[in-house]
Image (cartoon, rainbow, N blue to C red; front, side, top):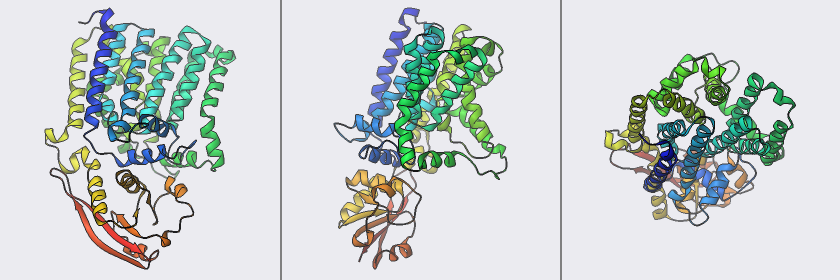
Length: 461
């Protein structure tokens, strides 16, 4: 096995090789509709946005300073997940030893969740990075007691919160650790220094929400919360837990559930500190999942602590076979996610299907030519805007989005051009324009995928 002195070097080699592979792989997949939407944010920087806090927009802007290719947009993911892996290693090394650190690093970086996360740029990428960074400095703060580490833990935790509002769960984990293990810290100025630093970093998002009627806070609360009269549905949690076995790896998630029941992880301060963010985050989503379906990526930050918990246990008990089998299964699931066609997945079973069809319809719009371009939904408008390199408008009824802010005051009736929809919208178009006619039902076709149908209209007055 690798010598203690070589664990850090091995982690660096794995990171560099895997990062290069991921960057190259990402260049061959079309942009996803949500990525295109966040890309548009990066061209219209603000202190906040309706759908999420602004950190993903800032990150995309940074990595696309010298070009707007898809692989450059996805460099955000490469930086964030391997940056998070670095902090996973350093956290375990600080608390335990290099062997535990390396095992935790491997479990995290080869988890199917990270494999998937490395491809599509979302706010989760930034959330995971800043969560891991804050956790590392919190480790140093609680077990090293340096004032600067408290300040950095607070500031970086706020950066996680400015990436996605579920970052608040990390602060709850810190709070619970103090309640259960270090209540005397409530009288320690360093804790309040961390809070002050967090508020300073997060204050732009608060200011934006104050200026905009707290619409982002309200939107996300409604997005993740069921109405009060919704009955309990245990099927949501069964699906959620089953998904956890897939995205964290069957062996490692099974081990995590086993370790949640071990008393030693609650008695030992270090083990409890490592365990708490994973346990609290998963319990939070299991509770919410009693009433509404929870998406698997929402719990992604839990895998940071989960990797540490499982890695430490496997290393201390010298369970090399368990590690190898667990990594093999995780790599297999990750390979299926990366190369679904090679494993016989086609049509709706192929996760790449959601990336296909938009570049084709954009090319068809270019062939048709003439005037402005309109679409029926924020994601379609965003991805067409990316491919066509021009503004695309949403004149018809749809859910609220940043497009409402960007196109405020525009008289659509004074414009003319091409309207694209996934549904028949002719009657609604005729309420805006005198002349609205269906040009064609365009079918985007690619072998191994289901055809995608787009309704293309020409509109004018």
